[in-house]
Length: 185
Figure 1 (tube, one colour):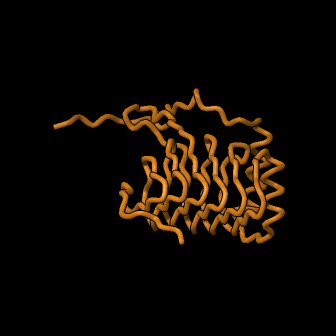
Figure 2 (tube, helix red, strand yellow):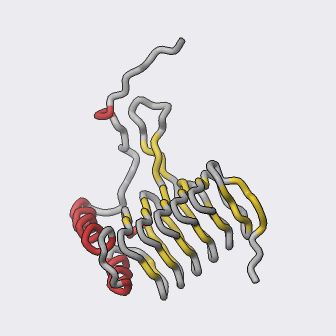
Figure 3 (cartoon, one colour):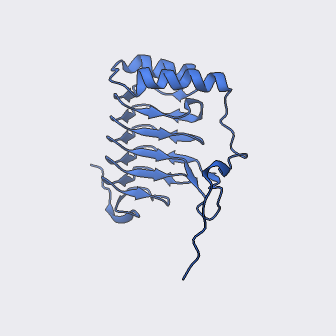
């Protein structure tokens, strides 16, 4: 039998986490994100311009569909010809690098943060995410912090990548497992 230990949520510890921006910048971004990104707003070029204004590095021909949520754009770098589908959540507590010719399908989640369940204070744990050129993250899939999805890898629908994905390989499941080679014709 184990003893149940109560957890005080007010004891949450994030003293080592730095947002990378002032309180004012975070507040202005919060409202910009709500109005232009996490809404039905369709003007892709304005979204790209706003991301650049807030410090993101964005390439050419980037499409950002409606109802996208981006935590901190100053931690975001996106290459050319990238498609970000509806209801994608980019939780950029750390740097997220998205290469060129990448697709983030509807409802995909790039999740840089987690909490240490071994501590009563649920200390924040963060890790960078890198999606190399040609990566496809399927609908409702999750890429966890500290993961690199190497060139042209695929994470199938509703899968979870908690470890690196090898190049030209298709992954499926929770946790994601390699299922076959990706052959591009």
